[in-house]
Length: 405
Image (cartoon, rainbow, N blue to C red):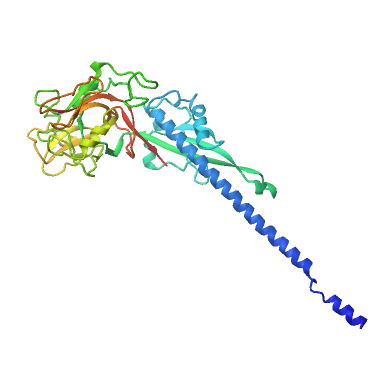
């Protein structure tokens, strides 16, 4: 019986528990390790998004500054320092490691040169800019590289380091827009633009501060002199510079087809746009133009007017008569050569659709005339579009800035 009791004691149910415990502990270690890696990778991914946001914001700011010839940012001495605070504001703890400009940008008169030329991209480094495409390489562009340290507490616990560097790079280019959507389907002739800006040498300081952007309130720009206000005629019953021949075809009056139906028009640099007939804008434009008074509008500039049944193709060199002689009504085409920025102070675009100038206090034209009043300013275009490589000719004071991969 004693022997049988000893046998029974040796068959207790807790036998082998130690092995189970060891197995569980080992398994838990693997699970915990996997959870640690997952948590650390999540932290790194979050930091990468944050630091990439900082690069994107910083490079767009730098590109805008370079396009504006702003030496307080776009220069060797100031770029990295000026952008560091911006990067930090968009990504906690992020710092700007370097800023550089492409060879095309350094040769461009739009740039206050940054002496560091951007190196070729590296595809194997997530923190480096990828190689510029063939199209991008033809554009003036800048790059900004930022970095941050991602916390990896679990990795530190298992001896893999408590943090790791997280770099990022962004690139932005600027230049004349290729395809771009107009705020209003109004075009202005190069002839009239030259007359009103002394061939691109006279611009007014742009608005700032609270609407209408000019005045004596804090942050506002002082009003330009009264003599600086100009009138763009969309229709004139008297003789004005650039009217009809070289300006607007009879029955066209400075409007292009509103392809979207929302008082907008997509036009292409060096492309041809069909006129919209009539002395008044498309119906949807009355409210849109009223809402733009006291703001800067972006207007396409045309350098050639052709009358023919089918849409012209190619450059204007193939159309020796760009005066639009004999043109009238439909089937006339404007050749778009660039974009300008214009502060809209007042207007008359219909019989009763008018507003007195914010500067002079009077409607800029009367009777059967149709017109806009204000002045040209320089700056960057606010919408999105494509950028074309620099070409000889006038930029009309406006450039487009866009991410470039």
